[in-house]
Each structure stands twice: as structure tokens, then as C-alpha cells.
Image (tube, rainbow, N blue to C red; front, side, top):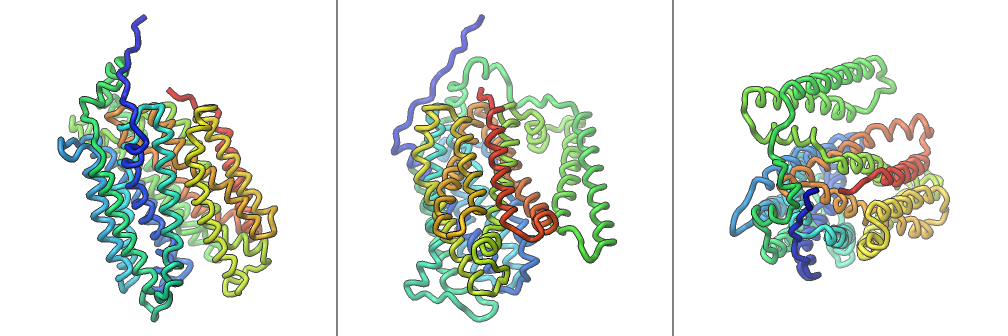
Length: 506
């Protein structure tokens, strides 16, 4: 039996791990400002409340497309001066900072919609390689600490960016403006966000040195080196067959949705479902196109990415199912926390009532709490993982998050919900770190970026499903009682926790 020989990556110091993680503070700052203020900007420019979900759908779709592309490109990049991932950090930071400066100065709704797409695309250029960066730089036993440090900076960035307009208002900055104009509190928050984004990412770029492709290859085991991970092993016929099935399924579902809504105008299904059905058809077209290129001996990035998708490691497939139920649960909270708590605590569904808006403000505070808890719990995760294992740690955290969501139904005092947020914060901290720590252990170094991008599919797809199906569940199954939607989310998070028992780390 041949002996498995491994060249170990050097152990990095705590300051080195901090340096390589600081950039995520700026990335989350940009996302936090986007998540907290874009709907407000849309409404200020005249968007109807019913149109906001379809305007928002650009953000997850952008990530769905951008992340595998950026991951693939960064896998293929190497500069002796700038490295492998850092060029993408810097380019994304420059573009995102410019978008943050321009976004609050738009004067038309169509401009705001385009700016959301550009901002999200720019943030994704910086963010996607950061996940692969930890896999590149840290040995396996330090990756939990590396992703936990990212969770810490994500939590800090989320808390500060969310409350920044509120703080500026307390210092006398105007929080109101004429119709069609963005308030100064939002504008200045975006300008501050642009500076924080660029400076924090630049700090990581200029304080961290990357390993060369040759060094990364030397860190892989002899067994791994015997596998050429760049080989396209999927026959063109498989691309064609699977592509035809996906295209046909998506097309049929789109037609059924069209005819159903045409004949049921009083109770049509959500139009966001078209994003899902047409997305299925588009995925089929992509596979057919990849098959055409491969059949004609034209190996390119599209062929490689689709082949990589087919050849996902087993650990990644097991984690994908966990991610699906986890993120579906999270979106139930993000979408329905305010109406659910307004009904459950204040017994109101009147969005113009003082009680409803008071709960809405309190939900913002609660979201700040769970992000704060997540930042603190980030330091607990490496200790817990060392005492047990990474799958067990994730299981414990997800169960805590599921119980936290279900407790929304139990607690009638809004201050007790801070306890709920402790459980959700523990889950959130783990969600941002443990799946990636487990995943990187199963990925080859020359495919780290593209597989991190593909892994994002299992965040975006449940987001699209949640935006379409949860409305149906809330209206027809729960008769408008949104609190039961949160209970459903809690149950799904516990299902995700149980599914971690299937995960086998290489």
C-alpha cells in the first residue's frame, strides 16, 4: 500500500488571519447598506410595495451568475505582484465604492434598479474570491478559525451599517426629503460605506501575500496530485441530454404558469415564479451550449464550469441539501419577521398604525442583536469544533437557530425576543463559516474558486423559492398568520441540522 505523503501548509498567526479577513468588514458594510436601504430608495422614487420583490430579484440572480464566473477566472489568475484572488478583491472594491457613491443620487426608478444590479455585481466580484482565499491560505485545521474570523467581521459590518442612518439622524442629519429625493442620512451612509468598503479591502490586499500555484500544488497530497482536476470527463452527449431535460421542463412550467395566471386573474400565482421557471429553461440552454462547444473540441470556461457542476465532490452535495433548508428558513425570517410579530405581539395587520411601525423599528433592533451575537459567537465556533467536529458544531448551532425562530410564536414580550436572537445569532455565525470550512476540505486547490461560486447556487435558489412559495403558504395554508411562516422556517432549520449527520468530510 502506497503511503499518503502530505506537505503541510504553514500555520498562520492570529494577526495574519485578521489581516486576510478585514476586507469582509467592507464587503458586509456594502451588503448591509444595500439590504437596509434599497427598498426605501425604491419607494422614495415611486415604486409600489407590490413591485419591490421583483425589483429585488436582480440581486440574487446576479450572484447566481457572477460567482461561478469570478471563481473560475480567479482560479486561472496568477500575478507575481498581485496574486490570485487579490486582483478581484481590489477591482470589486473600486467598482462597488463607485456604485455606493452614485446609488443614492439616482433620480429615477429605472436608474435605481440598474444601480442595484451594478452594486451587487461589484460586491460579488470582491466577495466570491474571499471564501476561496481562506481555503488557499490556511491549513485545514485553521480553516474553521479563518471562516469564523470572517463571521466576526461580517457581524460587525452588518450591525454598524444597519444603524448608521439612525445614528446620523441623532447627530442632526436630515432623515426626510422631498418626494423623489433620497434623504441625506441615506446618502451620507452610502458615502461612508464606499470609504469603508475600499479601505478595508485594500488593507487585506496590501497586508496579505498569496501562495503561488506551484506552492499550492506542493501542499496537496500525492494522491490528489495524481488527479488532473482540469480534465473534462463529461461526454458531450450528457450535456445534450441533461440540457434538453432542463430546457423542456422549464419551458413547460413557464407555459403552465402563463395559462394558469391567464385563467385565474383573481388569484394568480406570484410573477416571481417566472424567474424560477425561466431560470430552469436557461440552465438547460447553458448545458446545450456547453455540449455544442465540447462536441466541437472547443474547451472554454463555460464547458469547464458545467463539467465542474456535474463533478461536485460528495461532501459538497451533502452540504448543498443542508444549505437549501437553512437558507429557506432564513428568508422566512427576513421577509416575514415584521408582519408576524405585529400580529403575534401587537395584534395588528394595519401597516399604517403606530403599533405596526413600532414593531417594524424593533425588528431592526432585533436584527442588529442577532448580528452582534453572531460576531461574538464566532470566537466560540473553533473551540466547539475542536471539542466535537465541524458537522456536530453546525448541527448544534442550527438547532439553536431553529428553536430561536419557533420561539417567536411563544414569546409575547418583545424584549424576550432578544433571547430568540441569541439562538439565531449562533446559527448565523455558523452558517457563515462552518459549511465553508467543511467544503474546503474536499476541494482541489485549482478548483477552489469555481466550486465556492457553484456553492452559492444553494443559497440563491432557496431565496428565489422563498420569495415565491412563502407568500402562497402564508396566504392559503396559514390564512394570513405570518407567525406560522416563522415556525415553518424554524422547523426547516432543524431539518437542516439533522441533515448534517449525513456529512462526511474527506
